[in-house]
Image 1 (tube, rainbow, N blue to C red):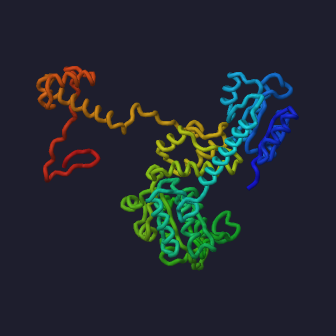
Image 2 (cartoon, rainbow, N blue to C red):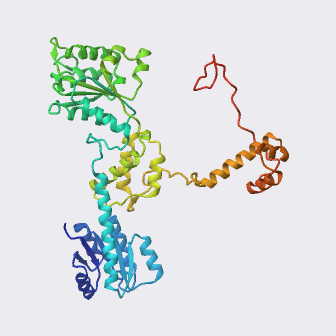
Length: 477
């Protein structure tokens, strides 16, 4: 492994020589002022830095040192910076730490202590980089672009792996952003058609007058503006896979033409007179309830039966357990590497906000939020504010505290007894099976009064055996 790079920002040549000798396991990079420090940081991206606060032109003060600290923190996010200075007032120590310094060492320095501090900073940075590397590693999923630890999603991935070896049509059902196109590509890439074209078309993104030409192509002169022959998407996918995204938005007229193609495996270009035989595997996807649309007559039932020989229902991100956090860390490692940012990870507020958020845009929304945060954050970790999310409020008490749970249950039971006895302590004591002195003690413990009469929870009337209960409205029929 290459030696870690240690940037030393110090204007004293004698101290620089001592520091170089003190860190033989590091590649020492020297700078005597802020300008040189910035140049070295840009060119070398050091692993850690040792910074003197008293730098020229303000060698007797700390202004230039703190400006250098801010510049290095911005240029190399995540790089641990150890501040060593003779300006050892408490306020300077606290200010350096608040501005992002890893640790502080007063001059004259004890080289053994300084070595310990720097070695610890280097180990911390090595651990952070290892965590980022591990976060970026593929997860136990057979599909390259699917990152998941959810059992249901893993079963879907294994199903896709098996279905990739056959050519039957597959219908992918799921909300927008759940990874339908990634699964469609996996069906193609993992199967015998992988060397042939994968052609995708979004049926909702192309105006209806142009969609037929996009799908089936047209001959020269077929309509105004048709100055040359154009091969359609279906023909272009010959031998490979055709992915029809948002198939639920396909116009009724094109549904009939697509059905004919699926039945006979032939197409006819607009304005053409010859039939063209095409061998393609069709994978379709939608976020719409096609069964309901077929029942309402808005989607051809016979086309649906052709498309859904095998149906895969993809769960939304909010139903995939801890996948939101897993994906967030994976995206963060990916974008930190892509943007050249040294980010430590997610802070506690970000982790809580990600777990609590419902993710209506699913994986696509999560990736976009993490990418924006990784690019725009000024800190070393991503916070809930960076993600433009709100961290949930901390619970007032620990719901898993057994004593607190017992007290809540006891208070609730006493309140119900008081309500049922109309405030009579003797009647309440009989209901609770305790003596009157005991109930006085309970009232004092829970700070209740005999006249504390909260309404009891309503009890539903029994439903006759021949009555049905509507699960939505709760009404009987």
